[in-house]
Length: 598
Image (cartoon, rainbow, N blue to C red; front, side, top):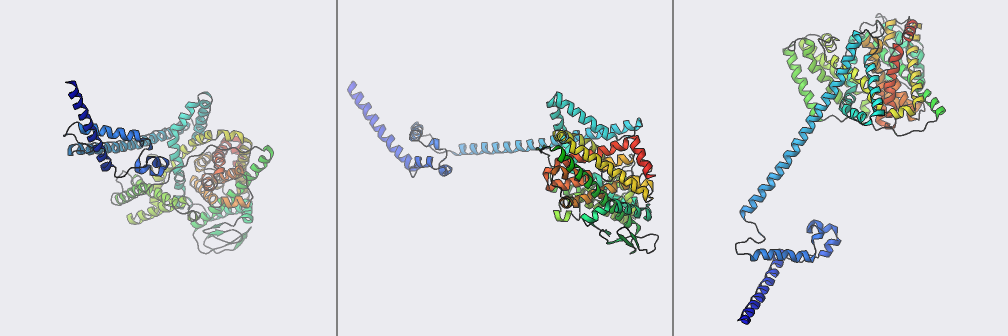
């Protein structure tokens, strides 16, 4: 009985083996019409795209795969071998779609959450800086302290950062990271905070006599402009150096006089053009003289101390303007402009109603100016674009509404906290600019410590020279003391220059701001060529000379082409204003300046 059973089992096994072998051959010819050369695939990585992972290509895995497939097929005739029915295909596709949709939705949610968090971070950090500035202003006014409140706040922030860096370095780093969005916002929009003085310049210079303007020009030409003649011809809209005509109108009478190197005659220009032209030449001479003093002093100290250069901390750059920003501000301008025409007091007062479209026109001018080619920026600086766009908007609104351009410019900068204009909003950030200097100084603290001799000595001498030279020559030519005082801090950033002139009675703050801005514009256009002409090769000397003579605008122009000078520009930019404020805050120095002015 056992023998037939064994014979039958053997026969079935051989038969099953034969069928399996035939099925294996059929599968091989069906699934793989050619036999892949697996060794060749493993040796040639370029074929991986066609054959997949090379580790899967070995004969053992190949045969084991077929065995598993065959075992699946033998299970029964209802099994689906190497194919999927409609239900399985639909299920697979549904799973893939759901997975893709889930991933995309998660990405969108993550992106939106990051943007929302970034906006909240910016609002909170910037709000703290603005609140701190406002609190300090109110405290100093209540205490009748004649010292720039923002400057005191800057020293406090810097001291706190230094103490934390010594005791708890991680806390100092966290504090810097927390305020980074606010600092980048201030850096990105910094030029806008200087613009209001230029926008209302036609109103500021209207009350200045032409003779006084000519004296200002004479002061700068005889004391500081002579070096400008020998080193660089300056071409401005209404005047030229190097014995070129300077146009002016005095008492509506044609005159021709020689004052130093200036030949004057009347081509029937307006007094306003004279004042703007005088402001340009005043700023030009003062800028160059301060640049020379700071640069040569830095070079002399460098030769004495012989400190080697080290790499500075990297400075982050703000992002470029996106198209959505243009469209957003453009929409705000159009909507608010039309609304203000039909409803002049929709927001309570004309200043508040005009604020949105005047602010939008200023911002749009800055965006357009920032996007201009470098060659065009030398003639049409972004700040000039800001002022022009705001003035054009004021002219258009004044003409359409028949209110007049003077009324619109008066609403642009009201200097009344209860009824602010667009200019008041922009200038409200000047205090936060000063506070931000503390963080910039802290970032470069190692550099300041290493090159302290060059930095401090050159900036101190340059600041004192700028203040006392202007006061002295103003007295010699008989210029009105109020006008002389108004142009004293011409080489200091607007935020601190306005704080300085507030220490003097009778100063014209609008003229001060305009003189500072024009000085920066001249420096931005000519600083690199002038430094090359004066043979300033050292990046320390170039950076200090630029920032101490043309503040932030000159710094931006030079650092764009010479990033190695940026740290020294940033340091000198803040320290020049700090030392100028400190000097004028000392009663002895302030009284000596007033005594010289007369």
